[in-house]
Image: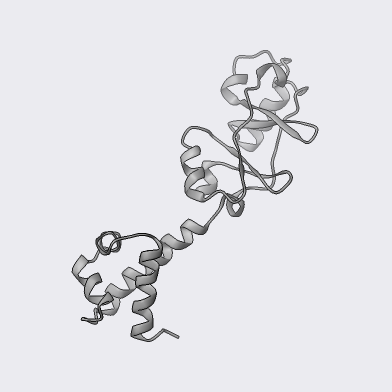
Length: 176
């Protein structure tokens, strides 16, 4: 059931202020005029349903996106390599799974990452420990989606840590 007009106006204003948006900022994002937002919040005008819906959906979409964390998005099924694996073994796993990289795990710890470009010209019996780079970034599962999006511009994957251990991996494809 839809709330009454007064409740709806209070909710819109509260959400806008919670996002630290000006009336103009909300209007630009929702594709309506700033004067419409101002009149709505002052209850001077009852805009049409379509305009109110645009405003409300803009606020809802932004608030839900901001509350999404990497813990919600991470893939818990981490395929990894071991330092003693050979280039040939890792290349086969990458090819089968269409991966461009694999985290390297020794025991319970992630110690590095091996990229397809690192193994491309190596001999088939070369060990992963000879080819790997420093580990991917490890971020807490509470990290906002927007923060990991920035990080993934410079890295192909990021490991996600829960309270005690790595919970998953996130790649640009997980943000789609």
